[in-house]
Length: 208
Length: 208
Image (cartoon, rainbow over all chains, first blue to last red; front, side, top):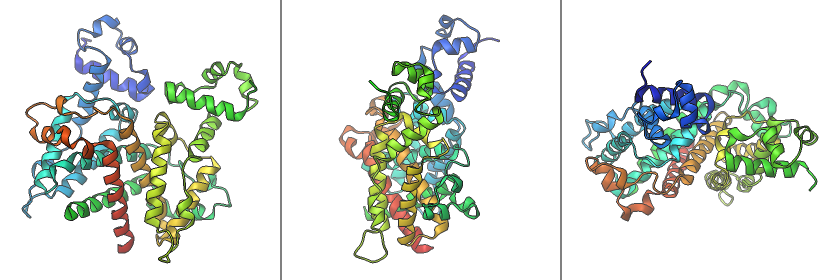
């Protein structure tokens, strides 16, 4: 099979999904695609570029569309609706690749499609009434909330369990009653938290 | 130097801090402390117990004290104040060990000191007025917010930078003006997000 950038990114994603971000090296990737390391450099300049190509792939799964329709007139999409829809789409994209969360969250961004996404978010927040000085913080804190929630959502179901809590700890044992399992799940927590975060941001922008 | 559990946990923390969670194995740890793998088993039962001992070490740095003083009477600590103080202390503990975030967030918890912390949080939320069915979700979403924010805070300062954004992306370029650097930082985003999240949770519990 002919090698190209797209196939290299496919293979890099599988590698990171299966073995973790620390396993990502040009050498390991070369052995995954049955090539000499040197031949990989015909397609990508190195590990740093691969990371940005993986970022672009994840970002292409994130829907930023609603922000394009944000305006302050009442009949259009509101900034808070667009933010919620973006956060949910962002969560889905990263929950599918949890090993990329730490890597992408802590590697300086050069990928242009990511800046294009941020541009849509910031422009939508501006048109929705946010002052320019605060748009980046709003965007960042929603991203942080989503990435932390993605880690919780991919955790095993018994991450916190009544059986593991000592008898002495009666409050947490009662709260972990299996009857409340649905309202205590990582997904329920994300729903509650995102709703609360956005409600709180609505309050912030009104107080501004 | 005599080996004991505490020294093993110290060494395991340094190993994970320096080489990442994937590097944590009894074999690697043994070579770090200059012992045979077999001698480690005199102190811990294996990797799973080590992880819980590391969890206990991190949890010991998290201050849950304010929750003990929560009551609904007006002169005591309010649940939202306790939650904010817990979140800030939680952030500091994990920002010091970012390589542990993913590992601890996705490994089922058996460590009793963690359940003890959760017991204080849940009991405080109950006394503060939260219905039992919702306490775990409140706690989880604050944890998720903190862990996602910790990843953002340990990222390089130029994670998102005006220089990297193409000229076409005028909204994000304007928002990333270095004059706004302070209000756009990961720390500013955490402050804004935590305040908004807790304000939104206050609204949730009132509407309940």
